[in-house]
Image (cartoon, rainbow, N blue to C red; front, side, top):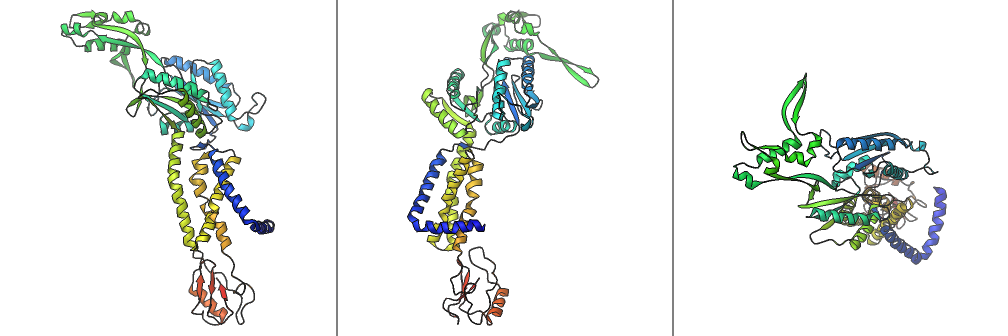
Length: 515
């Protein structure tokens, strides 16, 4: 510390001879820091390494549970080929406690990794976690085609789902009325986002169309016979979906008895048309006479928000911050895709949370700075000294911006928001605050020769927290012992310098007692 002080003191004395240049350098630093801040990019929260990976597989909506399980087993076998992987387990569809509803075409695969020091090289060099993710996706697409993948981290995936209802870091939501047009717009926007640097995983949330049996009862024929369309719909429901007709007990176990057509006949339109429909106690007609049947392709699920249908594009950026990626993607989407009337886009996920946090900081930060400025003025009661101390605040923020850039970190709420600028309000003004606590001038007690008849300086007094000192009875008694008489009635206290002046005492002019 002494060495630093010996270097700092003469350097400061030399710089004070060139005050205009120093002031200009400070102003230039503030402008440079503001420019660099605009180049930082932004994240709502910094990416934390959880030590594991999570892959969500999206398969065709028409897939059966058996086919989905078979694809999942093949995918897990491919993942286990990597020596960096310690354990793989997955979940398909919705659990018995339906807190997270999913179809059988969706599966969450959790990958636990070995210690980073034991990882074997990939392509001749030690891989990072991002390199391992890219290698996993490339091999899965090569060996197990027919499924889409979104790779992320387990906690991060759940966090995104709780905030926005989607499992990706960025969700591009497209709202409108016609599902076919929404799907077409989503495909065009996905193609544009795929070309943005750092896109990583870009997938459509919509699962495509699946065949659906469309049954339209012949109302004229049914009404002429005095029969409602309920008999037709119940017949189709029993044949395709099944109906419980009884229960079998084996000890304490209970098994329902369900009647329906076998899998082959359920897919055969001629077999369905030949089903008998009961019109009365002794009368039946074929289903083909009572209704028209045909298979149509339609969407298996519809998502709605704000009173409109919506589809989403799920994006997990890699190697790039959220703020700069979304800014470039928005610009390219606006240039390439023209939205029809009644359709609009909303960018959600972490980007939406970042924008909301920035809007709050834009209101709170000026209020905090004004509050700090007021506290400094209350402590010093001097406008010049208040502005002098407060000038260190923007310079300290410049240091914060440079620290983020040197560490390769984007702006985030934890790194540059409340925990950053607000936390350093105290240290920023403590240094100049201590510099202004100057020792008393020569001739006062505690520095230079003591006045005749008086002893050494008294010990320091307790601080009142505002730059002055507390006056205590025990301290007055100590003054009487040192001075040989009670404290003079004209004794007053300087709050800024922490000294006691005695202008009317018998000592030399300006004499005082260090407090």
